[in-house]
Image 1 (cartoon, rainbow, N blue to C red):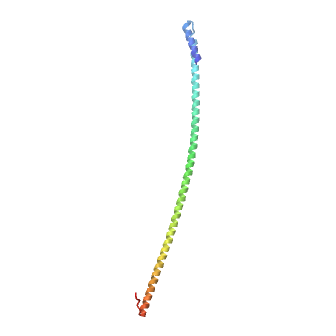
Image 2 (spheres, helix red, strand yellow; image 1 turned 90 degrees about the horizontal axis):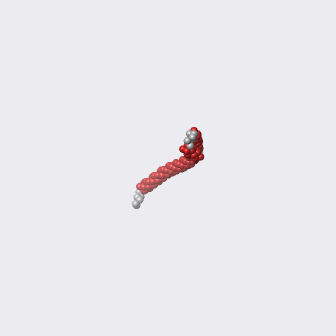
Image 3 (cartoon, one colour; image 1 turned 90 degrees about the vertical axis):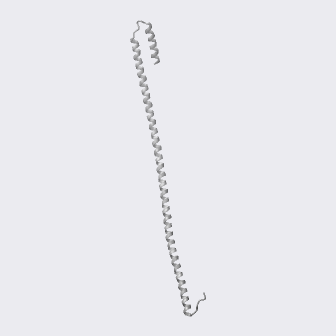
Amino acid sequence: MEALLSQFTFLSDQALQDKNFDPSTIEDLMKLFEIESYKAWAAAELEQEREVEEAEAGMQEAEQYLDSVMESAMDEFRRFEEELERMAKDEMESLVQSGERARKMGNLMEKGASLASKKYIEAALNSATASMKSAWKGLSSGKVHPS
């Protein structure tokens, strides 16, 4: 482009000094300017397209990386969720077992208390019966107990 500008300056000076100067020479130079402009425009457009392609490739790479990271995070979350569910299930089973043992212990204690109560009542009845028998014996023998 600098060479064309230099040529234009030269032809402009020549046109001012030479009365027989052919203006078509400047027109030819202007066509060269136009061609050079189109080449520069086409090169800029190609450069822009190349940069767009590079940007798209970078975006694609970033998307793939993001997808990979997201998938990895989701896998980790699923494993964490499964572990929590397993722990919750184990805890629930442990609580159910403890509750079942407590229920059985309560039933055994109820049976033990019921049995002890029956034995106490039986002992009290036996004692009362023995006292009554002793009292009847004393009455029938005519002896009275000093108490």
